[in-house]
Length: 215
Image (cartoon, rainbow, N blue to C red; front, side, top):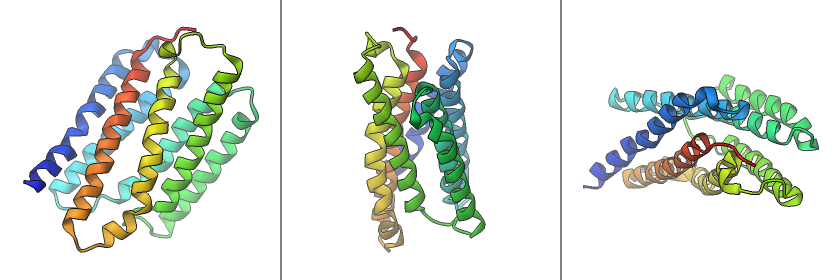
């Protein structure tokens, strides 16, 4: 029964991902420049997860996909916050941080660290993105130039990221112990938590892509 539930959760995560891709695709011409980066991200995430499920069915290793996905996710989200924080010091730092992170991820790949979770890479990504999110929220509160937050797409994106990354960082922090455990139940529960967090994040992605931007 537990295995059945795990598989349901594993494939259910594709539902909000598919919705986000379709919604973003239908509204692509109306999206502001930074939101187009988000649509590229949800499309890339959907394709990555689809490939991951195919590898599972073929009983092939798929953990290397996480290592490849993380720098792409970071680069696209960082580009969105660079656009929003365009006249700040943080925005000037983002290209260098993105290049440094990409270089670090490439080093991890060429040194052969593609067969397991990379706690350090996920932690650094989460820390930097949360820093961008907090900078954005501070800017909004300081300037008070957004009168209706419910119509601010970046606010919904920031809300999703601030929920997702602290929880996911905890999951990845303990992932090495759980993955190395001989207990199949622990491994499945790890994926269940990650999948549920991903579903929540993609709900926020869909909201971000759906809401028309107003001041």
